[in-house]
Length: 158
Image 1 (cartoon, helix red, strand yellow):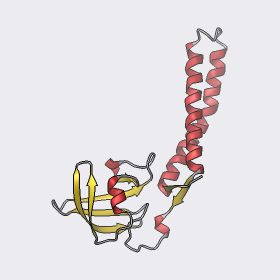
Image 2 (cartoon, helix red, strand yellow):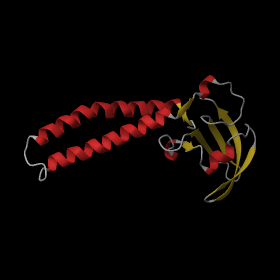
Image 3 (cartoon, one colour):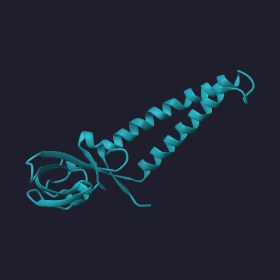
């Protein structure tokens, strides 16, 4: 089983979500019990809704537990900043053509990536073009909107 990289923040978010789901379990069971007391289960909408909620909750718990079991948590704050772009680093880029500055943290795929918050998937075109490069390098990255040329202004291990 291959390990999947995850940031410390991503692991904490998953553990918090798991805790919430585990606390919902007894409430769902109670709702099922109460609905069962209402009579005929074939015609009981409350019972069927509670069972469906239980199935969704259990699936989410299994999914999170699996993700945590295969996670390799990478804490870049404990590493020496060599100026190299690696998983977990925060990279400040300057668009060579427009002088526009953007800042991205390179994170795991599903649960962590959020472009609006400046977190991009390690498998995104921009991250793949940056991994392994050094602060001060100029990189050409093929994006869905065409080729972009960036200068790596800063690499932070935060």
